[in-house]
Image (cartoon, rainbow, N blue to C red; front, side):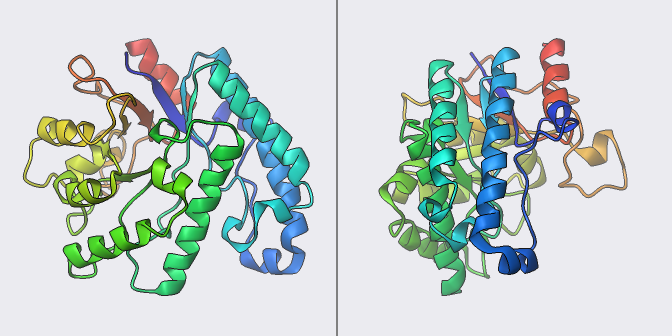
Length: 300
């Protein structure tokens, strides 16, 4: 059975200022420092619990948490936050709720997390952030596996995909054990970057399974059909973990002909293919968030 979910923001709850995206610009971080990060993080995790509980009431079993949960997370240790004990108790409660209700929680850190970067400072910050995100999942009491994944892209190709992927693999082995057991990789929407076929090179050398993004495939198909690419991605997952996929409709095709090819639509306009043939979960990457999910489930 396919479980469907959405990412980061609940638009209904946001009307009541329930959000997990409280952050700050660098100037504010420099001025207010870790105490203000702690204050925002405490508000964010409190609201995360409300969102996860809303999802449970609405029978939504998949949710991607915001990577803004802890502002400027690569700049400090979580245990240095003045409110850490309060935050920790809430995270544990969220994790227990997720385990009790079989909810699949995950992270998708932003595109500045580049393990293959030729710049050491970028790599160092990436390793720190990925380890921090995985530590959050650990303290929540969530199984250390790709059931609760942290998903990223390879990053740039820098004119030589193999060399870039080799750097990625080398730096992957510098991650914490939790990061190495949670990390997944995703195909790209730009033709100069990585298809599922490309990613198999990394997956075979690290054990990182491939998250198949349907819309990214449509923008960057590579040399395999959609079903062949999906099957290849699914084959990289451990047999006891349901693979994860991403789905979105094209904004350019369905909502705004002037939009870029890679832009995501507000809603889902076609049926997600192959759910009758293969077992996988889906995160909808739509602008309308839970509203798009609810509309799609009603159609089903």
